[in-house]
Length: 354
Ligand SMILES: *[C@@H]1O[C@H](CO)[C@@H](O)[C@H](O)[C@H]1NC(C)=O
Ligand SMILES: *[C@@H]1O[C@H](CO)[C@@H](O)[C@H](O)[C@H]1NC(C)=O
Ligand SMILES: *[C@@H]1O[C@H](CO)[C@@H](O)[C@H](O)[C@H]1NC(C)=O
Image (cartoon, rainbow, N blue to C red; front, side, top):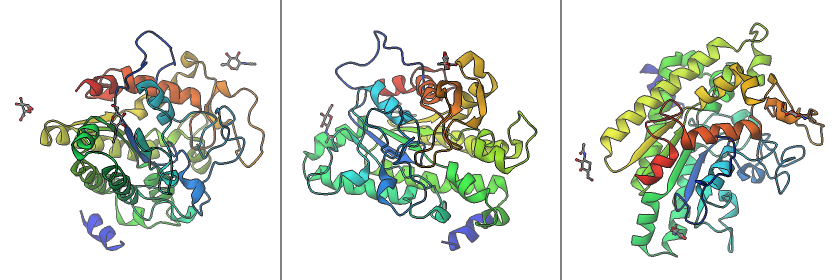
């Protein structure tokens, strides 16, 4: 708990176009997305940041080429949107100017390198923290209020899907960089996870206060298995960095506990934990079952115009941090249709009916 004081001062599924896929009426009227590079769809293009993906070979498998998505193709949010019947969401950065992008189906506020803590990712330049993303949502809300009847709007918000995917950078671009960030000297891993969840909860409750009621909260993946961490730490060949996976699991455990607590405290709302860790660990441990052969190297060096690996469908990781589209498809399939071990306590299709 001392850690909290001090730091306060420092101020998926295989795309099967089957009969039950969505056509016509969307499962949710809109989707609002808060997160990091795993779901950023172009907000960082407008920032003075090293964390950018608006150049080839990013987007090599995306219909409109490089857009700022940190993937060869679609992000989990693009895929989720397709499945629930929504168009690709505009990045918030595209919505603020006069005549900006349509905000009626939702907005994506995610920013690469950003995290729950304000300081997270600072060494990479500008980024939009979770707290600032929530402030940006308020800007959207004011835009909507000026255009839509308030009652219709609040009904819409209460049925809309809010997705939060934050926390990875608070580890890989903060806690695990002791030369650049003091957090690991101040907090042991458990207090750090608790601190992050406390700050996270605060933002969730602000969003709830704005009238959002359906929350999909993505857990962290096994960050000890991403090529970036494999190259930094000395894990035995073929193994992940155990320490990193262990501290990341503390965050996930605390997030799951938060989900239980919020579901009790806010009757009429639904909070869901997306077990990205479980799905990715399954893919990394059993790559062949899913059609992958390479789990420990990135397909793409991803410097501008660099040539990616020959067959990217064999790779779990596109660059040293981010999964390939093929992996995102599995993650979203499980989030939509999976049992409580994948998406807890209900999956996204069940959320839509609540
Ligand atoms: C509310 O939802 C409908 C779809 O159900 C959509 O057409 C409309 O634009 C939404 N309005 C707002 C303000 O979100
Ligand atoms: C939650 O609300 C529903 C109706 O909206 C009510 O039937 C139920 O008893 C409530 N549950 C709790 C635990 O308050
Ligand atoms: C690429 O990899 C996929 C998945 O392992 C495989 O099915 C496909 O045949 C490969 N394509 C080529 C051209 O080798």
